[in-house]
Image (tube, rainbow, N blue to C red; front, side, top):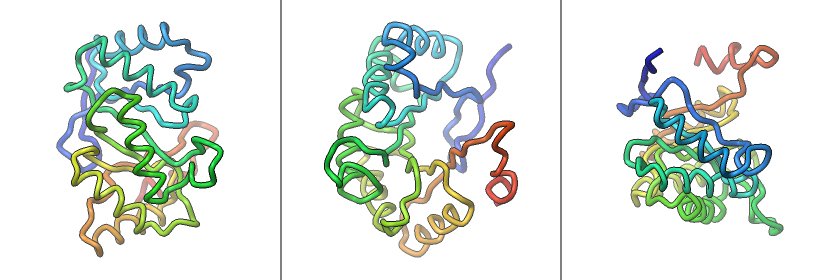
Amino acid sequence: PELTYRSLGRTGVQVSELCLGCMLFGSSTNEDTAIKMTLRALDSGINFIDTANVYNVGISEEIVGKALAKSGSRDKVILATKFWGMMGDDPNDRGNSRRHLIEQCEASLKRLGTDWIDLYQIHRPSSDIPIDETLRALDDLVTAGKVRYIGTSTFAAWEIMESLWVSKELGLNRVVTEQPPYHLLDRRIEREVVPM
């Protein structure tokens, strides 16, 4: 069957309804297999790839970068990655602070072998970091052209609304997507996130 495409959140960017998730690249999915999977996905029309800095401590991003270089189709791919998780032994090597976020964006760009990230997502909320610090840093990355859109992952409805409100109040780029856990055994988002 032919793939269909839909808007990425409130944006005009069209993404395939199927997204290639790369969490296991570099662990149970070795590099060679992962590259073959990525090339097959791209050949079938999937144009949306999702990874994160913490997936096998950067190895997933490196493999995705190699696959995109091999395919020569970076300009056609909507590439998503995330930040938040522990990336080293220092207490500042995790979280949603400006310091960690900007360091991890630069590291992800290098690992992915690209000049920009299409969708940069806050992997988890951090109650110890004011959301305005995170959103200001993300807005700076959008302004610098390193990130095109921003999103959240596993945020509660009130946390998404707080992000939208802070962005409006401060005149910042707003989050355009939420990536929640959702399957037959975890349908929590149906209570508040989906209606919101």
